[in-house]
Image 1 (spheres, rainbow, N blue to C red):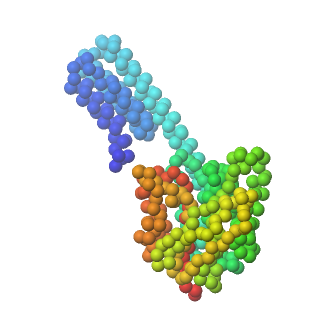
Image 2 (image 1 turned 120 degrees about the vertical axis):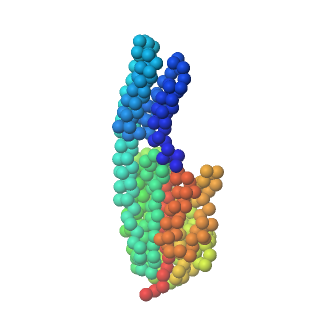
Image 3 (image 1 turned 90 degrees about the vertical axis):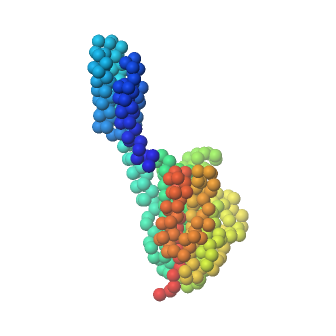
Length: 356
């Protein structure tokens, strides 16, 4: 409602200036209201509206000069000239704002195109699994991030990837694209998730080595939190390997966070690896749901600074379809944050359905 009333402000200030000019003594000038009307029009109205308010303000002041027999008052002419200069500045400022807004729209368009080129649409059905995905870009400026997800049907079942590249911008997109390409290639051949994680670690280490730099530079510190999941076609289980990524939520009659026993470091930090990648195993029967997400979901804050209670919210929608659950999550995150997301958000929801 407040946003809808703002465009009315310049006309309201113009009207107040007219009333003040008519209802007060001759020596009380409404210049401040008229100037405020023109400046606010530059920020809130299109070009034609700014011109109209500027002409209206100067015409109002000129009419008051006539009404009060001020045509011979040199001070009044000086004030009229000042208002005319403010009107010209308001038009210039409006054009400048319009040009910057157009540039920002173009940057956002390029960012969205780059993001969509990296994140291919996830199929709704793979094998015995129904899938839904969600991606929300941060509202702040025109930033693009490295949140990513993918789902592929392989000889080993459906393999899922969700990840989050440290940092923002085109370098994060490039890093995400490299990881997704490596996953799409290796997911078919790797015999198990630890081998797949090793392939991804090797690919990301080679990618980072292509960039000149020293330890501690932005490129050298580029790492990716990731989570790999495997849902076999012929076995009612889900296998998980996590590399510094938030644990998934599992719905099996009740919603719970899957406890991961030995998380590994993020990708591109292979020097921190200990005894290799550990696989966590959980039952995953027909009707069960698995939610993978990036930390942008759980780190969304409301106006009081409280974090988004993901598990609690998902419990209230757990009986609905994957499409409806992510639809509710989408709307709820925007409402919870007041429409001001501070980070990119990605989520991937998988549900096993009965064998056909």
